[in-house]
Length: 113
Length: 114
Image (cartoon, rainbow over all chains, first blue to last red; front, side, top):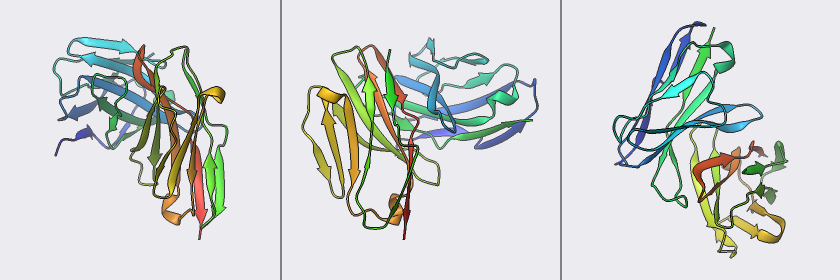
């Protein structure tokens, strides 16, 4: 069965370190997204990609970067982790059309100490 | 710009009660798409329904029903005869032809007491 997986599921890191969260999907979807979930804010868009070599900033992109070198993967990098980036991160993918639902990974809980 | 408002932060009901979760949206696009997702205590996000802006028919699926009203920019979700297993956070979301990424509301936490 096709799926979308995130790794690691849990991570603790120190302030100032670079961290990369992995996202891999086997749906062959063109669209991929990264969201963060914080209490009271729902899910907020960090970065998204509509295809290979395409990346775009979302509403809360400061301090994050992504790259899309193939269809399956969209890793999210925190250049210099800050305590404000402690959150639950969700990766999602969807077909190209805007009327299709997004499929979400299980989430990564990141704690920056 | 898109915006989704879920004014109810938390709702608590007793099992078998009916409950309605409100969702109000804003978009400048005439073609848009509305979604509901469920996030149970285990944390994953589960897709429930999609509605296109040009299809105003309400939908019923078992104990779940959705009321889409363009005139009031609302897409409300009703659970009939609620059960403990319905306890979760429910998110309403929006996309349009200009932005395929979902814009989410802040969510409504539903607690169903036995």
